[in-house]
Structures are given as structure tokens and as C-alpha cells.
Amino acid sequence: MDHVVYLDYKAKELENLQTGNKTMIIRGATGRKMPYDRVNEGDVLYFIENKGDGLVKAKAIAKTLFQSEKLTKEESLKIVENNQEFLQLDSKLKARFGGKRYLILITVKGFETLETFKIDRSAYANMDDWLLVENIEKVKEV
Image (tube, rainbow, N blue to C red; front, side, top):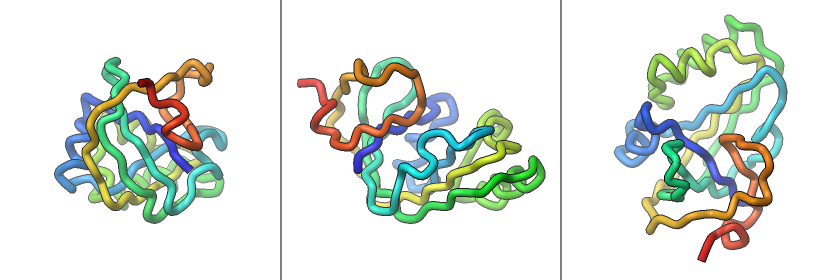
């Protein structure tokens, strides 16, 4: 299964993945939203930065994942802090994800920079930061 994952440009998430400083992606929400129960070990994650250019720049494989059950604010903050070495979140992202009721932590492997390409988002009505595309070739613009 292929996924398009938006990374925070200002926090230099893509750059930190490229250098190997960051080895884990996080998503969190008040409820169970994408990619909860939709991402699996071995899935391919294609990365776009949230700076408006719409270019897929890299990919990696989901190596391991942790999906929480409902958490208290304190439990959530502790999970974020305990994984900060792998997440490399700036203070803004720590505040965004710390305290969420549901967290997903995905360790990535095989990071690879790609020749950039655009995707067709017309089939995706919501402007979410995670798109389940099933097969990247179906959404790749030619």
C-alpha cells in the first residue's frame, strides 16, 4: 500500500529524514483518523513538504508502527517525549502532537530521495496531511 505523507517544512522534517537524524514519523488526533488502522509495516510512504510546491521528493518503508489506544494528555506527552530522539520534533510539533488522545508512531527504513514529481489530488476532497493512495502510479502526474 502506498501513502503520501506531508512533512512540516519549517521543522525541516524531510531534511532530518535525509540526514538520518529523524527515523520516525508521528501523527496524532483526538479521534482515530487517517492513518489509524490504515498503515502497515512494509507500506511505502512518499514524502511531500507542506510548502505548497506539491512535489513528492522522497520515499521510505514503514518498518515498525505503534498505534495507541485512547491516551490521557499525560500519557500522550510522555510517549512524544520518550521518542523525541527518533522524532526530532521542534517545539511547535511537540505542542501539536503532545496531548493527543491517539498517536501513531512509524519508524521508517530505506529512505530514498527521488526525482521529484507531482500528484493529482483531485480525488481527495479533504486537505489532510496523509493520503492513502493505494498505488502511487495512479496519482502520479505525467
